[in-house]
Length: 489
Ligand SMILES: [Zn+2]
Ligand SMILES: [Zn+2]
Image 1 (cartoon, rainbow, N blue to C red):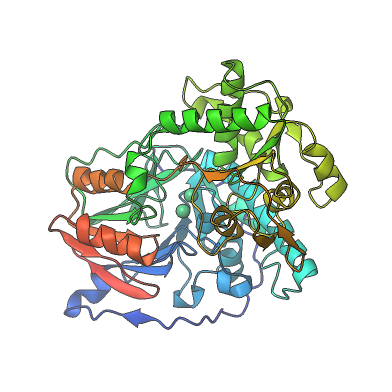
Image 2 (cartoon, rainbow, N blue to C red):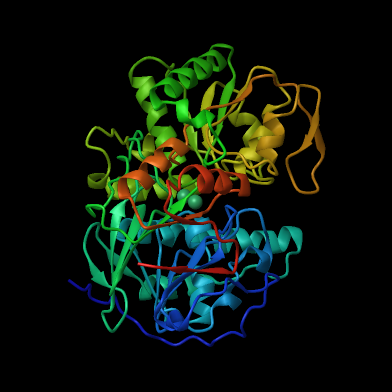
């Protein structure tokens, strides 16, 4: 059944079309049937973690899967390559609320005001917070670092997206295009609250895009539920984040919680603070709940637990959607967790880390100037603390550099800030990832048994491993940015 539009068709001025460095590159498609064939083009997120955005076209209609911002780039360069879009997509379907999957949606709708966004209801609530926060962060970066292109969009552009967007429940089929020729449904992806794999059905072709997936149950979110396709899938588009990480295959949540509990307990017993840098969406809510459980089980002392701003706002969305979490999930009231306050106030941070505590703070990869970086700047000066990374660390980030540094090394935690010498020894990493390890990704390919499989959203070596090891004799593609592949049924 088709969903009812939420409202609003106010027109915004179209901005001049973007130009970006990447040139469109098209694989030669055989024969005359091109216009009626289904094609797939990464507009971002091909052979890279990237600004995920994937264009699906049957020659007549264009649909975009995700529209994110590149986590490692700044300004216009962080956008997907929207100049690859030759016309307004009818729809943009958003898999979940992480910025690398939804962060460019307001910009897209500034370009193409007629495009209709779709996401699950919980993802829309999360996007509202994440996108408004992005406007604020970009505004601050414009002031602090003189990035003139920021902000890429305004709060009013976010409001426009939210007014136009359709919130769709899981496993409910809806018409994506006005002519009804493309239908879609969202399926639980197990990654964060509201995260979805997207099943598209159109004449002669079915396609399933995983978005980000986690096969196993987490503390709050149940593992993924694949659509029941009875081996009848033409194309699977699957993420490859952990394609190059064989170690993650052996990590279990249970073991990691045990290791984390022991390490955190040791910090508290030596009167230190444990800093847990975490993504605002997903990891923060999971870690707060794990810490609260460990305290209830007396495996951690009853010290204060703090959380930073955006993580708290998203926690409220989790609390509103508690029926979508695991029935066993024990989501504590947000009031049980203290506020960090203004992380730029150094005296406040120094006071906060004076007494034993657990602090869950963004960003997970410890990008400079974020609360986790500013807290770490104070904490690395003393040996009693502990810094525990709990997710993926990109090698270019401060978090990765800090983890791989040694006591005595000097690092910079603020852009243009001072070099601070690390005295703290206890800096380590735990595997609490919300991404499926590669053996689980391969199982998804085997279970859905598609005719075509397209590997996206992973570093080049991760995508290459998946392309080589998870194709199982089917047609397999690993297109780079701007490369179009034809999908045969
Ligand atoms: Zn994600
Ligand atoms: Zn992702």
